[in-house]
Length: 114
Image 1 (tube, rainbow, N blue to C red):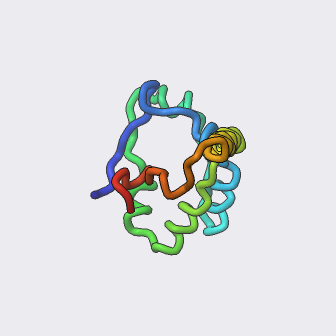
Image 2: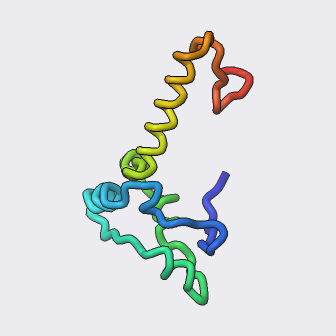
């Protein structure tokens, strides 16, 4: 599929910092010599006239090395990491208490197996 603009609004967005480590992401972008900052969600969704994303074209024309570096820098925020860690801990504890083993699990990406 191709890249497309999807403009943020109250229904389709949330603060980026609630799911990603924004400081790490900005640092990764800046390491490539680009100027980067975070536009607060409130400001982004209140724009009267949405603008085209200037970064989208750069992404389409950019090198794979830079794109992968930026994608690798998209790590979970502390709060999301805590949720993931506690969820996995609960799953592991439930597994220990049951008669099941990991071979009885379901792949979340491929529900019918790998």
